[in-house]
Amino acid sequence: MLNPGSSEMLNRMETNSNDRRRRIDAQAALDGLRADRETLARRTRAAAWYYPALAIITAAIVAAPILDGTTTVATVLIGACVALVLMERGLAKQSGLSANRPAGPRSLALLIAMGAVVLLSLLAVAMLVASDHRPWAAVPVGIAFLAMLLGGLRYDRVQARELRDAV
Image 1 (cartoon, rainbow, N blue to C red):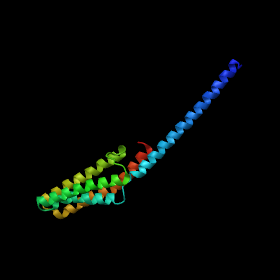
Image 2: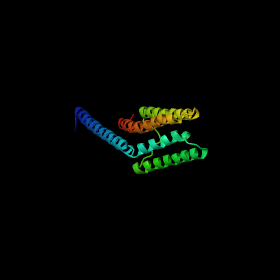
Image 3: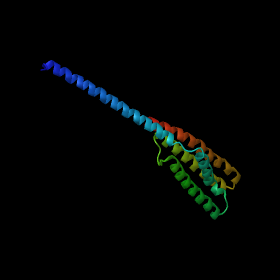
Image 4: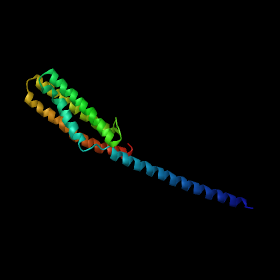
C-alpha cells in the first residue's frame, strides 16, 4: 500500500508528464502552422509573366482615351477586361489558389495606392486628350505601367511576408 505522500508524488509526476506532452504537442502544432504559412506564401507568388502582362493591360486601359472612335476605345477596354479575367484564372489554376483580397494591412494599402495611381493616370490622360495635348498622355500611361509593374512585384513580397507572419 502507498502512503498518502507517495500518491501525491505520483500525481505530480503524472501531471508534469502530461504538461510536457501538451507543450510538445502545442509546439508541433505551431511548427506545422508556420510551415503551412511558409508554403502558402510561396504558392501565392505570381508567375514571372503576370505583372509585366498586368502592366501592359493597365497601360492599354489608361491609354484608351487617346484612341479615336468609340468603337475602338470600347474594343480595347473589353479586350483588356477579358485579358484580366483570363490572367487571373490562369494564375489561380497555376498556383491552385484564388486570393481575392490582400493578406494584411500593408498589402491592402499598397493595392489602394496602386489603384489611386492608375485612376489618377486615367484622369490625367482624359484631361490631356480633352485639352488637345495627346502626345503628353504618354507620361501618365507610363506612370500607370510602372505603378502596376513595380507595385505588383512589391505587392507579392509584402503579401508573402504578411502570410508568413500571420498578420
